[in-house]
Length: 112
Length: 115
Image (cartoon, rainbow over all chains, first blue to last red; front, side):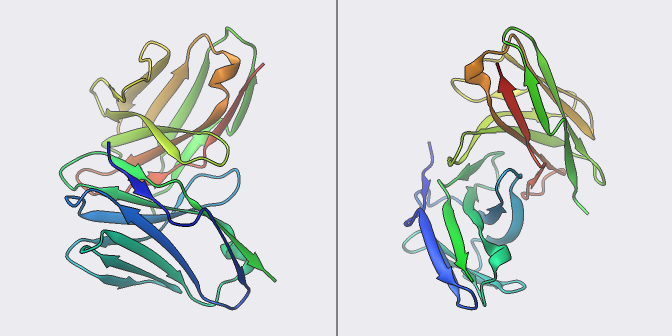
């Protein structure tokens, strides 16, 4: 199967600092990627997506960077807030397929 | 937009009974719905994919006779855990997708506890 892994299982940042969460994927044919945020006891929440024909996409306080050469994806959160504390998953998809493959998740803790 | 609901949010049942979990897309027509299972501090594991009006496609290792999936309409899919056992206790999450759009929108999850 596909393999989507995260470099760090946990990440702690000070409130107001920027956060960077990394993700490696193994299938070079993957052409669509999504970052999800999951708070404790809740379902995943869509944050931002990016297609493989892009290398950067920005949202509100979030930026996703895609490096297809090294099959690496990152999520940058600007001015991290306590409400950003959650587990973040990256997911990859081949557009012709149905499935998303999820990474193991990174737990982000924001220290007030 | 793109709201997906699940019912119930929590359920406790006795071993041997069956439990039905509903997944609804509230503001769009979900041509495809997905069912995931998640263990504590673990990632989501895809159990099955269902297209409206068709039989579900189950992932390897998922018993189709134990986890019955029905997707009878464009806004509703159900997962029935039959003859539940304590090892079926888990967090079950559905997601929905419209036509050929890639993005999946997730429900809030259902926590099942089998005693």
